[in-house]
Length: 251
Length: 387
Image (tube, rainbow over all chains, first blue to last red):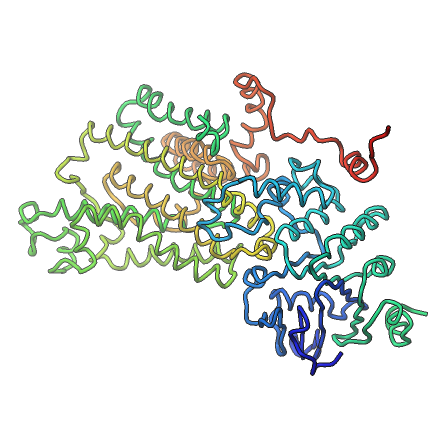
């Protein structure tokens, strides 16, 4: 896979992406491609620039140089909500949900309709909305808790709720930042199952430290180190790479 | 009944009926016209407090400059009334008859261009809504599009309140300066200073306040109302759910500004003058206190908070003029430390359960009656029909 390949083959193509904070290059001349229906995991030591890459894609951080193309549309010039409307969803590292609202309302607000001020004022909770909310809630194991205030959920349930809030937007590219951090073993297993299910028909980018979990889900792995790609390929290939063992996995 | 239910719960319907009964029946029966007019004045502040509930309580945008919008509404109304009071006959002794008296005192010989349209009542009524809305839109766009928020926004609104006060005082010839616009007499020939007029204005004010409460209720019950809370709690999540957060903030800021301006216009009509002392930093902060005491999450609480604080202010400052300001400070500290959700918080935790038991026959809905989480999953993932 090289930079000369035709961009249209990929859902997302990142080329020569650089961002520097006061001269420090957090992401340095990065090239990365994501296929349709692929689960692509980014791993690497702390400060490698993993979260920054996700921030750059979703518009939270502005790139200093380079391009990010999604369906051949340049994302670097767009604002956050426009990128979301193109079909890119982002889950944050700490579960960010609306704690004062119920699970139902959390999902309803994420339903992709009535996103303007006027649209929100005139939004009707019709059967389309309720059916979809229930469908998603069942997927993320929260169907019995629809009327519960989100603040009262457990940590793992909050993570699922946020994943559900992304799913209801039906994004083509789903970006998850440490989705199983702080989860129990059984919750991890359920999340892995969930991810394998929701990836049908969409691509997923995951930043994760939990190697067991990465093994369970990854189609392809990119190892980042100091803002650059250290190694790329299948999990087995990456794990056998001496450079990766040196800086990240340990001997 | 079904159409009402969609934007109002039984509790909220009772809340609004109680306020209506208080405004239209209890207070007029219990008070003479002097006190009633005084409470009418307090009620004009309630418009601001209701706006602050949406803007600050729900959406988390603390504005310390609501006096600006109260003033804009009040001055628009005052300009119209002043022009009507300044007929050439009434001002015959001036060196330039037919212009407001304070202009003549300041050697101005012709009506300034921006005063001219205020000869029309229609224009004035439109201006009371549109001028503050445009002003709030400009401030909101400049701030929220650049993601200025929190304490910085509060400081900037305060600065704007200070600037507008200085401008009004400095441009004496055009604004009436520190005295404001005084000696207002008639509205379309109808004398607003008589007792009868004061009664009528009180009722108009009350009806407008009920209307504003209903309008706010519609906003709060729509998806936009839930979005306001979402923006307050997780702004980034809203943004990354495909919403333009700045537009939501601009809307609610403009909405609160328009409510304040309606209050300001009604203030001018009932009190008979408008001055910069209702525009500046101190009144703007007092307005936030009204809202905080009432409970910044409840539009009904805001009305009671405003009435209570102002009634206390009048009563105590008549008896202990020096101590009143300390009292106000102590009240604010008490609200923050002891009951952060204000009167409405106290009501919700102590009185509402009682009211609920009395009025409602059916069990309350919306409470989680779902099984505990663990059982939920168990059922979901492992349970199959046993036999």
